[in-house]
Length: 476
Image (tube, rainbow, N blue to C red; front, side):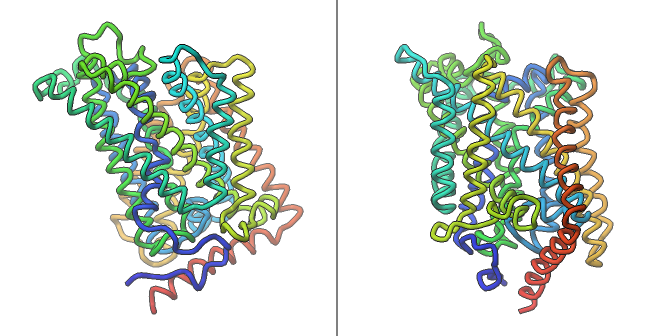
């Protein structure tokens, strides 16, 4: 039975306005599928070599398992709080707030990273005309457009993201078919046999491969805005991981095949799909792919600001941040203040780094790596929270425990791989930098509880009210 939430939604956001396709678009856009073959894949290949396809396959399996843990909550309740609200429900408000803080950091850093991708591919395109554009201007352009769409209308945002990603992915798949046809659709046995790859390299590549998927759970931030949220959101979470993973495995195989015998190694190219198009004899596809990459980075920045803004909005309504960020726009029914603050932060940090001489792709790698820790922490916590929550609901089964254990083990692989063996500088300090950010959030919450101890009771009361409302609706 379809469950309507219109009568009970109290957040002030536009209720039941997003279809399944539009909800799925939020997760797909946050993954930014085009970013993987254009920027992420060369980094994964540098570690995993011809085992890159396997690294992506393992990552897909792991994140589908995590998605199934997320859906233990998503099938039972929905809110703008995303995984923050789920973890608070399962492991308590303190852990929930820490996860929410980590997730806000992760979404906003992801938006900053893809701003750099937007800048890089903008200049790849205009270089064909013989000039370059200052990165700060491009950061401002992308962040400003994202702010406008996120501020104005969530439905407009998701429709835009859906169309942009469809065009971008379609062009890459056409190029993949051309490359495969050029090789006679033969099977590359060297890749299937993992020639030259090592287990250590594949494990290190897996760390970077996971970053290709982060944000796939962001449909959960649309809890008040999705139609039939207990059905559409769980489907969007798992399907986005499956679709993106299938795309990544295929395209990573095609890229390695297409670059075989090339003078430019895959891991040394800053525009690999353009090079691939030239190698395949369809050089005119290069600029089209660059346009597709540009589109995908913009869509990802927009999706990240949409998701991060809604978590800030939800936490502000719980008293964690200033109450103004928890106010919806009277006409647009969007979290306009939270979105505005998110957009400003997303612009200012990469712009400042650029002013200090850090290169655009270096900023992408630095901020993207730190963002990954926020997602990994949240994925592990949601996997632990799921069986605890089900136990309290008297719905826990042996299979749920097995699922949680497997999810945690899969996510621990990239966590451990990011610190051992010790990565080169400055990546070796990023885990501790993320922990420092967490410490700041924990200290803030500790001081807040001392000043306003009623916050915990109010948060638990609201989470319980949301859960009860959906439980009652199921009985109708």
